Image 1: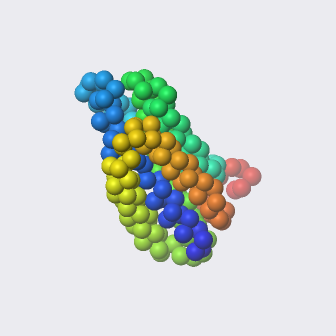
Image 2: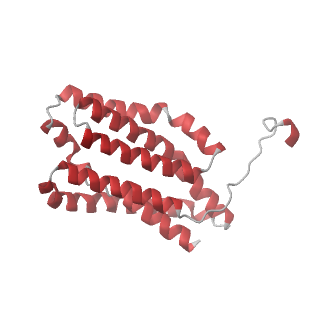
Length: 197
């Protein structure tokens, strides 16, 4: 359990250690985007996450939650790379869509993964505490990324984006290394397959 929590907390820290966070809006302006285009990008980002929330929840119930979140980290890193190789409205848009997909894949899957693991060790009463620590470490990652980015931005936006890609992939690697138990099985009467009734 200790190994699980240590890697989980490290994942949450690196998942938010995105050096591009403080500068992506400025980057868009520097690449000639209008306020309307920037608003559109942010709206598409939010809409992608909302629209895919239910389908991603179904995926998390049917497949490995850990694998889904790792795939999400790859989507996010790929989205950032779009910003490097296609630094215009459409490249930024594709990047935000990929980032939105990652957000929807990880939202419910993460909480279910944590609950299942705590339940396996009969420590589900610590669920809120563990999530609170994760959120705090995520906020710490944002603060640290801002401090580093203020110094690293002199190297240009690609430096910040590559560092963010590396952090996203490291967060995904930490997820892969999580020692997890099998998900808790819940059968709802009336909805179970015939052979389970």
